[in-house]
Image 1 (cartoon, rainbow, N blue to C red):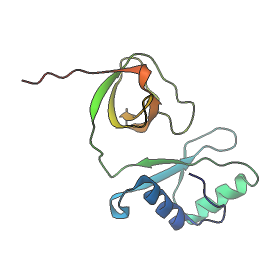
Image 2 (image 1 turned 90 degrees about the horizontal axis):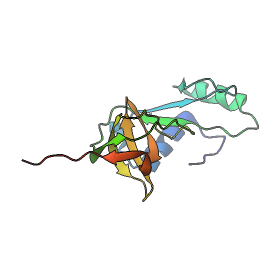
Image 3 (image 1 turned 60 degrees about the horizontal axis):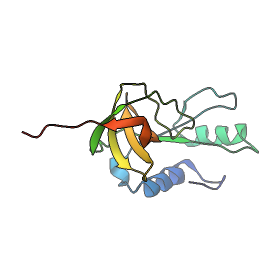
Image 4 (image 1 turned 135 degrees about the vertical axis):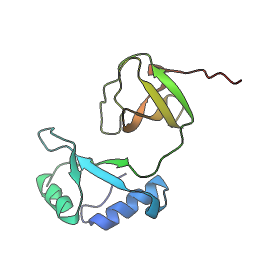
Length: 136
């Protein structure tokens, strides 16, 4: 999602809620970013935080990460990681070989959205295998 540099913090939260198709009162979007030296995640909690960040990234592209914390999304099914997957971008889910991943959505035929170790993100489907459940 791309936004105008002049957007204020409440407008940014509203845009994220709309993009994620969540009801505003149910969602607490926790924003964070990495500083120009790659340190982070650093939380963004207010209008003053957002303005300070825009100054840091005056002529650069800024990527904010958004994590939902108050809405418990249902898991569609679980998968076990076949390989380690280190995040390559802020939207990626990092996990290790053998980790159990709760699948939240199927992004497309090749990518899934899941949660593992308290983090939410996307990852390539080929890195995990569906856990078969017994129905008695």
